[in-house]
Amino acid sequence: MGIVNVTPDSFSDGGRYVEPEAAVAHGRRLLAEGADLLDIGGESTRPGSTRPLVSEELSRVVPVISELAAAGAVVSVDTMRAEVAAAAIEAGAVVVNDVSGGLADPEILDVVAATGATYVAMHWRAHSHHMNDFARYDGPGGVVAAVREELSQRVEAMRAAGVRDEQVVLDPGLGFAKIGEHNWELLRDLSWLRDLGFPVLVGASRKTFLGRLLADPDGEPRPVGEREYANVAITLHCAREQVWCVRVHEVRASRDALAAHQMLTTPPYHREDPS
Ligand code: PMM
Image (cartoon, rainbow, N blue to C red; front, side):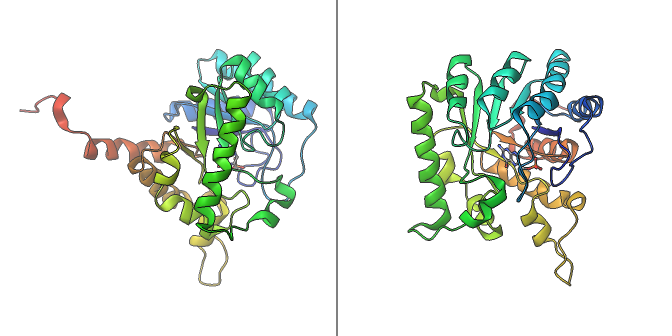
């Protein structure tokens, strides 16, 4: 899944693709690099960010979705709002990627149920301006047990709204109300999430915990644009952990790594004999 942030303030690429033409061109570039899916978002979720008006979010994403869907892309809309999800589906999106898992605007589940769209439900506790206050996981089993339980509750809410299990994808929500060690703990062994029985999506690309991992000797985090090698290691780990989708800013690097990984892990039954 290649990321197209049509926002002035996303933490890694804010402002670069805020004009629809620039966003569409970026989406085309990601498709050419091998993206199976484009995730188009009009609201930044970086820590501390304030929310756009619904009208602003709509005017950012709808034209870009229309054009990329018309060009044949499989389009996901990154939104927490029912109204935006409905308009995006109308414009050609087939996936709703909701970082709040239906908590920010419960009516989004009705839109998903009525349209049959694929629904990515991420683990989330609070809006970005204060999510860091919620990065506490003191119960038995720590962060893994809490995230599993809270995602299970979201699945129950989806079912109650009429969303079918076949529509659902679950995401651990790296960096959302989580500090670095929480992210690593969630990622290390993803069987806790796989075992819930849904496809899994992971978004680690360019996140703060990678910047901290790669900090210089003075403790200065590695800049956002220089975290890609570590992200590719996570993509490969995700492949081994049977993750369905990785959400990335730079498609080519993960694509190349997965091509090599596939050669190393797929038995050569169907290969031509080179002799
Ligand atoms: N992370 C961001 C935005 N949307 N969606 C899903 N499903 N999972 C994520 O981890 C996720 C997301 C924040 O990253 P960005 O600002 O670089 O897009």
